[in-house]
Image (tube, rainbow, N blue to C red; front, side, top):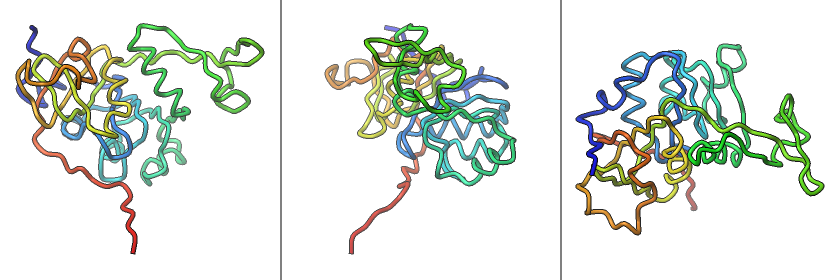
Length: 231
């Protein structure tokens, strides 16, 4: 069995370079690859194209990369929690492609399955459809959407083993699992790293065949994006 473990985050991201396209897992502030993002910020890699459901917040997640002007283009579904993102978008500093959330997920999935494209009804009759091929199936129009082509997929899991098998916890499974399949090189950081055979095979969400590098993260904030209480 191939040992995918690397010594640390610096080794995990060693060949990410200026201009690369990155998929970054997570949903809101849940399941964000915090260690990898921090290392990318420290390494000052720039002109990145980032594919992520959202753009973090001003001082957390991809928001840290935006503050350092490391992101050239954001491909996202939900971006409403980041004032710096808004400022860069409105000033023309940041190229942005907004995608329906389901389309974002299925373009990731298509890449993981080796499919070049998908057809979806989402976006028909809106700006999303401008310039895209439309075909009619059984009386209904569908948009052609290309699979993503990312140099790296960077994900965060709850548990993993040195063979790359991953278990995601609760909401963090959103986008992490489909992105883990879709990068040319998939980097996984985990809260707990164990030896092969320790994880229950029935609980594994991403098989190790999709993962190229794995390491145990050192610290996770686990922020609450919006705290809701009752009185």
